Length: 252
View 1: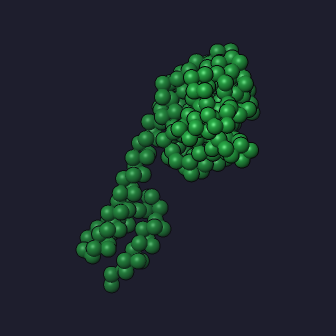
View 2: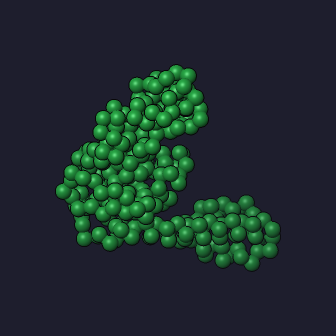
View 3: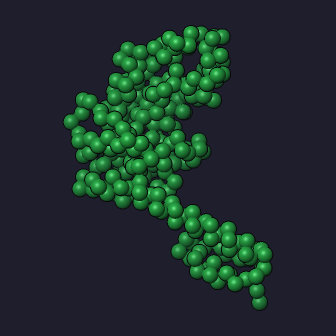
C-alpha cells in the first residue's frame, strides 16, 4: 500500500542529510503529482546543501594554507564609511577545521542571519575580540588610522594571542604578529567572515541604542550611513554628538 503524500513529506522532513538521498530514490518512481513535487523539492535542498559544502571548502582555503599555525585569527571592520558612530573591528579565532554553514561576508547576509551567526560564532570560537574607535577619535587621527587602532584593540581583547592574522585587505601597523592581507577576504576566508559578522552586529546594535537616545536621526534604519533621510535630518537638526565632523564638510 502506497504511503500518503503527507506521510512521505513527514519522512523526508525527518530524514538526515545522509538518509535523504536514499529516501528520494525510494519515492522517485511514484507517479503521483504530490510525490513528484516533494521529490523535486527535497532534491533541490540536497543540491543546495552540496553547493554550500563546496563554498565552505573554498572559504577554508587560507585556513588550510596556514594550518601549521595553532591560532589563526580573522580580522575585519564595520563602519568605515558612515557619517556617524564608531568604527568597529572584530577579531575571531575559530577552532581548527571549524565550519559554520552559511557564514559569509556580513554584507551578503540578512540582519536575521547575521544575528543567528553571531550567536553561533560566539558559542564556537576559541576567542573573540572587539575594538572600536569613537567619532571623536576618527576626527582626530582620520578614519584609516582609527580603523587600525580598533583592529589592534580587537586583537588585544582576545583571550589567546594569535599566531597569524588573516586581514580583510589591509596590513595593520603596530603589531608584531605575522599578517596576511587578503583582498575581499570576508568572502574568501571563514575566519575573516566571522570577524566581519562580529563587527557588523556589534556596531548595528550600538547604532540602535543611539537611535533610542536620538530618534530624530533614524540611526536604527541607516546605521549612520549617508542616506537621503539621514542627510535631511542632519540639515534639519544639525550634527549630533556621535557625528563625524570630518565627514560632514561637504554635506553641511
